[in-house]
Image (cartoon, rainbow, N blue to C red; front, side, top):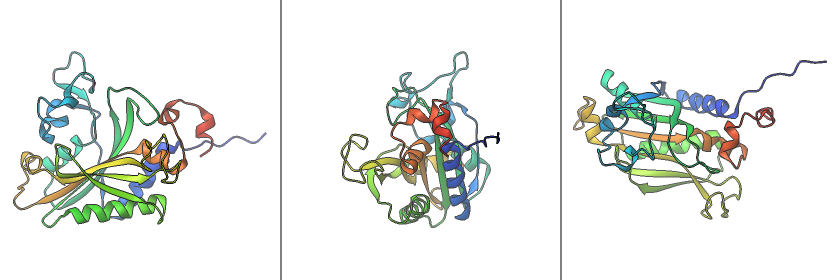
Length: 242
């Protein structure tokens, strides 16, 4: 009887593909700790003390460890890197993050993100747009529809959200995409001057853009998986398809 071959989990496949694409674009791959201080997870990213994301309902705080959390995003790695390196640079940060929130078809308490950061003297919002458009066309194909819209995040200004056309309905609107035809996958924008200055980079000389995307949603879009919880169920019937 022939031995059954192992299968690479779809999350790992997408992370590997995304890292490969960004590496081809000149990005360095960087990683950081999953347990973070309040300073790096919030303060250094221009997230104020009274911000809702600091509530117990949104963040896992480490019992017995003062001002320590399970990171809620991979953005703290940006600050660690900026404190130790001089511009110009381009980095991409894959990793697991944690949010204390109710689970549903598109949300989990633990999930994976890919963070990107570019800092230089002449970086603009157009560079951000071009980079992400190229990335999604390489990942999903040339016909992929992408939508940019303004948004707010404390660590960028201006901020944008990038949506990709819904895999289930093809953009016509369904329950999964909340009848919009698109699924939000990226939060991005120009790095806030407070974040640059706080990390020791002169915002009068340098500018940068940053983005963060949920790998789980990238997987759902790529392979037509309609419930993110399936990715963490341990069901080999899912994994063995890949």
